[in-house]
Image: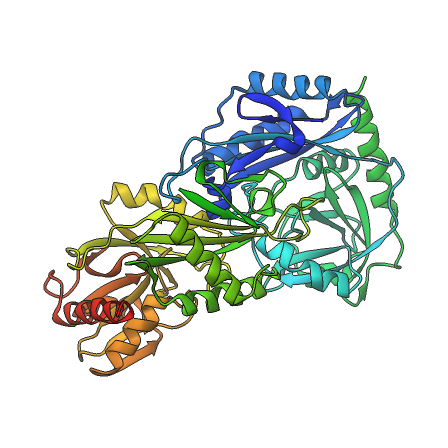
Length: 273
Length: 273
């Protein structure tokens, strides 16, 4: 297995950064994670768009053009003989002489195992936590709060932690959030979130079928919801059947969630043709 | 020059972490920075106290006892024949198989050059920015906002950025903040801050001489202040003579600031006897 590091392919277990890197010194960096099926990186342009936007927001220069990055990713897949996998790109603040100023960024492109099932997962429980990420719209590597919530999550036998601020819901550490309200409308928060690529795809699919509302979603809205689900690149759509001690709807994955899951898998399949 | 990495001393330029480390993947880690004069690590116990407290808050196990860490630091100084320098200890979330869960932490102990002058620096300008650090009392490696403010700081020809929230002042990215109010009392914020070791020493020195107030300091208090200064391990005490477009007092370093600087240098000198 190879990893791409700055200018070359290296054995994955030899992909190292010097401790003066600004990610290690100051937690400073951005990343992307995309999935590959049958050798095809899905929605690659969308992920690259966001990678360049995140880099700009963090004052980091991506050392390659979009075309060069695409080529490196394809060469990595080819050399690793990868068919189905995840690809992670990290761009750090680089080797900083004063351990604070941004230097020449280090670029890491790793391949991860990724087993996707086309069947929708069973409904999960999530818990809530009051928090807004520091730069929610930018895909930084800052996950202090998400990681610190893992213990509470495991204790509550929950699958994820839903962030809110004074009762206004935003997102999960690594997933977006949707509800189907009492009127059957699909609603999702639009502020203080990372704009997920899967979220974008789900919204596009849902608009073909009915009313979609991007805007403020409160915990009160959530308690009244018929259905709820989360979205992410690796999880696609997972139905949420319990939030804290509240049952969602009748406690089973709902019809809208199931239909969107089928449509999302079909949308991905189209990319492979 | 050697760096200590987990279990061994390695050449500083070979001190590397694998890219799966949780600092690189998720910005997850803590650190400390202390100074060494004439081979003596100053206030070492205070820094170690905070290092263990930060580690606990972040669910990280420090792989050594306090005595073992002290011994490693002394051996590093001895092997590097170091007399005056800075010592940085970083503890990361370790090599995480799923790039999210905390693993066995990686410990890095680096030596940095550090030239301290016993003369107090000239007065500096600082600017303000509305922000509260995510876990202000814990010395995490998260400096996203501090680093992103560097450009604005340079453009304003300012030396540092003073954080406040709705007009209540807290701290700088890497320094604590003090004012001398119109009544001649020394005041410093006590909430939403990292409790600096130099701050603690300055407070102890100031209590011998007059009234000290730890509590809420507002921007209005700041505009009325006679004197203002910042404290840090490497900067000791630096007088602040301008904040945004406001002149502090008569625009010159004040008598209280100067007296505390002399007392702080004397306190450090006592540690060397």
